[in-house]
Image (cartoon, rainbow, N blue to C red; front, side, top):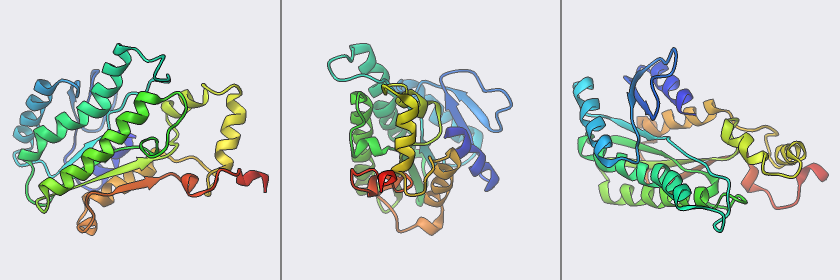
Length: 233
């Protein structure tokens, strides 16, 4: 999803800097900073660097970094907590805290939440909790820093990424689980990273100037349905 967001913003003419724990990916189209978002000091340095390289304030911040561990509360270790909450929760907090003072009036923060912050996916206790944190933080930023900065969250459903496949691998019959999941989507397909990128661009634009503190579910209609499997009717 992160790469799709970068490519879409570049297509719109934005100057983009992206980050990740590893080295710059091969043929990556934008500026790259090797960064662990769970490290507050490293994030603060990256924020200063981004402003210096851009030569101006940062107008848009997208918090997309995410880690997933497929375990229940009982099975989760302290290391699992540090990995998931460190990136998904503290990482978003670190980036918002570092960049908000460097954003101009009219800036837009877009956090990537999840439907898992609304409803609990099985054996994903820490991930579910981390996304609920992102949703709460999104509202707080919108309230505390409006009208200067807008802050919204995109809450994707099942998007075709490695995380989706890892979720299906937990099922007793992964292929049956995939078929059942598709039947529960009103649009009869899973989301694509480009779907998330399109909403991110809209939330960053002036067209979304009255949108703040909101959680935008993007799940192909999955959570709109009752628990009955529509594929059986």
